Length: 117
Image (cartoon, rainbow, N blue to C red; front, side, top):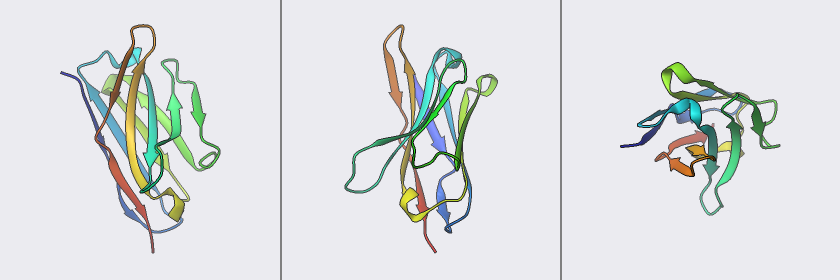
């Protein structure tokens, strides 16, 4: 059974930092492209950052220079380091595991990030 579980969300003041973690089980993690997405109330889910099997990364313009995605294949975990957080970063953050060659796509349940003073 595949499980994708996020952790690390919470309440943080503007300018602060958080590190999100996402651990996947039941899959061969190293075969998967991993991504972080977010969804604010009343808005569509949007891409935040992705990291490929070979650790190439891609970021939304709104988070470039502030967020960093990384992966540890030995721990089946992908991270999102978020610095210089802004109120507009407030959202539910969702982890995605995707495999292209054999179509597979899995989502976690999400972790809430709230940036407020």
